[in-house]
Each structure stands twice: as structure tokens, then as C-alpha cells.
Length: 231
Ligand SMILES: *Cc1c(COP(=O)(O)O)cnc(C)c1O
Image (cartoon, rainbow, N blue to C red; front, side, top):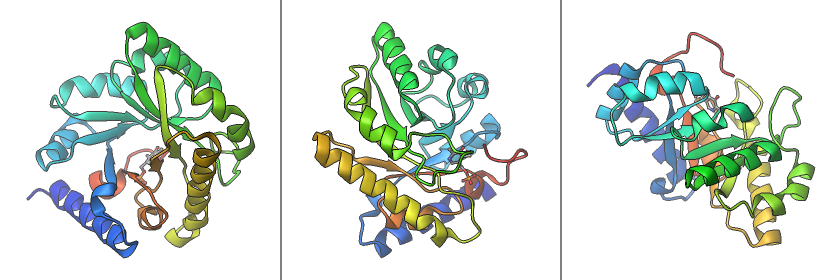
């Protein structure tokens, strides 16, 4: 077994443990392997070990990398997206984790419609209120959700957040709980299903799963440290 395959297996085991501890079926948590900054060879190694869903955060990097990767993989966009990159992103990605403003959602919907595509997306919420973080404030989201939920070519199927950085994963738990509560509130207020919660990274995926994560975005625990700091 390669080192990467061993690390991937360890992460899968930890995901399953966290799910069982939370009384959840491990099959309800999907692993998005975040391959940003890592070469296509790393993706190939993870794919050979059975990983199917990969996350990238830059359109240019993805445009160069994805054609060198095996066909049949599923690519999720997880980064901050400029509106003028939507047209380049749409042929590569069918799932967007980080829709952080209404204008971006409208741009994705419009271009997807022109392409005859329908894509899925999550709304990024800045639950911590940190100024350096992207995302809707809870107030903005409450106000703008009805229009977002109606977009015909962008199906909003959940929420995403990033917790503030901390050495102690448990410090992230209140932010994950807040995202779940926000989801529950929107779902019951608007009757729009929001089954997906994208939360938890290498340092904090266990409490995220405890609070209901259905998608965990994990990079460095699988692929090793990145040459550049996370964005
Ligand atoms: C880089 C990144 C991750 C993965 O971070 P790790 O700490 O390497 O697991 C997850 N989510 C987003 C939005 C990222 O940009």
C-alpha cells in the first residue's frame, strides 16, 4: 500500500468512527479529497485507492490538472469563485460548495442555463463573523434565501462553512452546530430541502460529523502538507 493509500484509509476509518460515535451511519458522510496544490499523480494514486470525489479551489489549476486525471472522477469546487471564472468552471465542476454571495449564484445559474446544464450548490455561511471569511451572514441568508432557492439551473441543496482556525477541534463545534441550526431554520421556514452540510477539514472533521456534516473536505491528512498556506 502506498503512503497516500494508507493515509486515505486512516481518514476513512476516522470518519467512520466519528459517525458511529454520533450514532450516524458512516455511509451518510461523503469524503471530498481536497487535491488543491497537489499534482495529478496524487489524484491518480487516491483514485486507485478508491477515492472518487475531489475538491479544487482554483479554476486555473483545475483546468490544467483535471484533463490529466482519470475519467469518471467527480470534481467539486470549494474555493472563492470570481464571476468572470464561472464560464470556465462550469464544464469542470457540477457541484459548488462555496457560493458566498447572491450575484455569484445568479451568474452560475445564468451560465448553466445557457449551457443547458443544471448544477448543484451549497451556500457558504460566515457563522463565526470573522472578517477574513467569505460567505453570507445569517441575516443576509435569511433575506436572500427565497430568491436563491428558486434559481432554475442552480439547485441549492445545503450549506457550507469554515470554522476559525484552532489547535483544538472541539472549539469548532459551536460553529458547526450553528450551521446545522441555520439549515434547520431555512428548511422549515421555506419548505426547501437542504440535506447537505459541508463542514469539517483535516483538523476538525470529527466534531463536524458529530454535528451532522454530510460532506467533509479533507486535504492535508490525505495528501500531506501543502507548499502554500490554505486559502
Ligand atoms: C484547503 C481547503 C480544505 C482542506 O483543508 P485541509 O486542512 O488540508 O484538510 C477544505 N476546505 C476548503 C474550503 C479549503 O480551501
